[in-house]
Amino acid sequence: MTSENATGARDALIALRAEVGKAVVGNDAAVTGLILALLCRGHVLLEGVPGVAKTLLVRALAAALDLETTRVQFTPDLMPGDVTGSIVYDAHSGEFSFREGPVFTNLLLADEINRTPPKTQSSLLEAMEERQVSIDGKSRPLPDPFIVIATQNPVEYEGTYPLPEAQLDRFLLKLTMPTPSREDEIGILWRHAQGFDPRNLAAAGLKSVAGATELAAAREAVARVTVGPEVIGYVVDLCRATRQLPSVRIGVSPRGATALLAVARAWAWLAGRDYATPDDVKALARPGLRHRLDVRPEAELEGVTADGVLDRVLASVPVPR
Image 1 (spheres, rainbow, N blue to C red):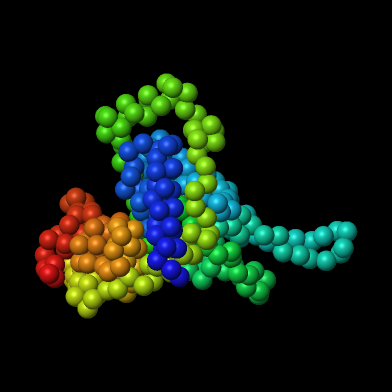
Image 2: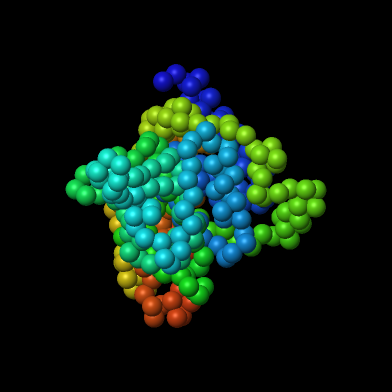
């Protein structure tokens, strides 16, 4: 791949960030996180209280991408077959055939994933890790690219089911969407006063600015981003430090370490560099690791949070220079 192709791919993804901004105000960090996930072929968990534009953000991203997208509203009565597909009987032919579920797409929006029981949540485990679905003894590959973007409300809200650790670890990033600042909220209301309709993104001027070709070129360029031994050592030291704290029941796994390294390389490439630095790792440590920590219940009662643990680790582990 030529440098011109890599530059064109980077320009397309930067344009993607600007395009999403036509619909979503004040969530630049979340938009950048979604782009990093696209570069790493990773999945994203978006968490926030109802009404902070989690679903709108994903819909805007889908509108700005030339990819097939599907939305599944997770509810308490949703069954695994409603996600993955199932074997159905055709009365006309007298034969059984497989009917694909909504998971067979490029970008799957799993809306309010923690409002469905663990049985249905687990239907995504194989799809997210192996990018295939096994039904009736046969494995069926999913399209490439395949990315899950799941939204959830904080688990303390009524009617939610916490995601199991095994599924949380399959998400590349956990992005939190806070309540907007006063200035951003004024901007949101001003857009609505001028006629913005979140249900009609085409009227807001959103158009496709990137697709599978640009993503493939970008991923190829990210794979060439170099990392020195000091960067790898820093990633390992951070992850090992999370396993040694008395307030943490389960620390970051080696899979979490590889994910953090991958997203740091993508961050470096998006910033226009062909090498990653310890500062890239530090910048992505919270969204890349917060969902991989299991804080002990007694520590949670004392106010300890995953982000607080990571702040402590980042402050204690020396940054190589």
